[in-house]
Length: 523
Image (spheres, rainbow, N blue to C red):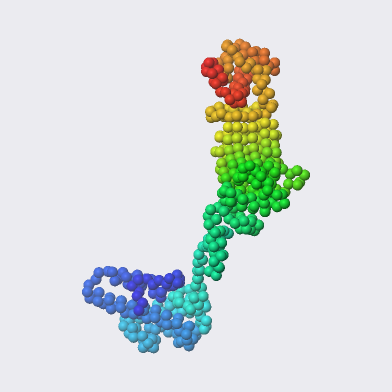
């Protein structure tokens, strides 16, 4: 039996509304909670029981009419609804016989029950007749939902698949022998796995992986150690990769056979294509020269694009020196090498790079100690801020570049402020300027001449004219006349340029005491 002590809720149909007036329900709750005498409580208790029976009978009739619409289209209540005539169960004698609960309803409740039935009858008129496929249409908007057999078609079945790590090429489990494999195959497979753990694989497996285009993308192909067995196997692999040049015989003629000597031989003869270079990814080679492999004499060099090989993960972790001299490369090609973790020396002379390439080298600021970018006229003063960021530099070559004294002055000032020592090769034009400093101004002024630009503002007009005259004696282009403000600014600019030029000179010569001692004496 339904319990109406609390509001009815239909989870499947949020629009479900029981056929109980809200005012009557709230009034019954108020009367129930109000303290009264025992007689009044007994009388109200009987009245509430009768009212509850009436409400319950209305609900049962509504449920019965809904089910009878689905099962029997000849129901008397539905027929009355279709004909536009419907009697109240309060007035109908048949309804009393059908439900004994209505006999306990008081007369005043029966009179009020007629209004409630009329309101329920209005909602019933809106119900449509259902056919034999009533479950397809679903419940009415305000009726209580019922479970339909058709809901099973909307059940979602989830099938979870387990992750498999056995599909990656080279997996020892994937390459394990099957149950029907013979003992000989099992022994050979076990030997292959042991050699794989040692860093050595068979010739056929190594060559097949390269031909099929499935290299070990994570750490590169294992090439073994530098033992005699592994070196001989590695040379035979390289000989198969570059047939027709007697590579095996030529490598065995080397005085020292190692991975470093082999890559030196291949680099010197221009055999380092991208495919050959990729075989050294997991090796411990220290330096690589790509000049002969990258040049294109008459279009006969078929090396292809080599630099992207350095961009593969965990590749060339021990390379400390890389030479790209005399090879035309693009600025953006340097993105392939700026992540090498131990690169300390980079030779980029005569590579046609510009300022943008220097900025791409900033990620190497923690390791790069030697940089040679000479014979690249496109590099000028705008590249000096990027070079300043390379704080570990101990050698820098900017010979035959577009760098002028203005960029060198800025670089030298930073070197002094950070107390760094660097060996630098500057363009010839800048070197000539440094050698002719005594013709630009008075290089070694003596008292009462000043050397500090900060003192110019405290000098008189006569003192300013005297200092400018001394500098004019060295450089006739300097004007020693004018107003006091004009002469002050002119003398200050001359002394500041002299200070910066001396910093460049001390940076080239590797000294830093002469200028500091001179300024201390004149303070």
